[in-house]
Image (tube, rainbow, N blue to C red; front, side, top):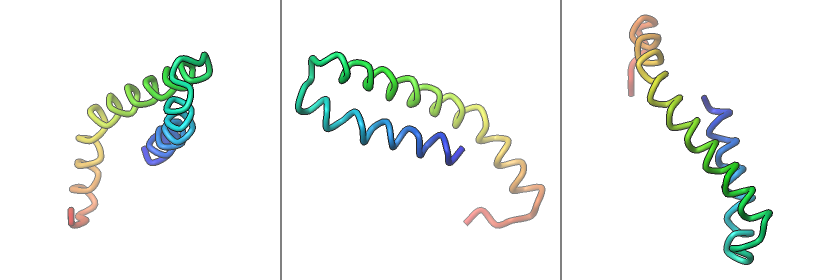
Length: 65
């Protein structure tokens, strides 16, 4: 889960400065697509797997905070 968030952050760091400087460049559009795909996959996986993480934490008896 953390690796997916780090990949999404790296895609954002690569995409955003290029998009600000050259918004219509093909590399900007490709990096924007990569960022959008990782954002979509990250959002879906957080939505699907968060109950599993909660169940794991409850089963281990770890405090939530």
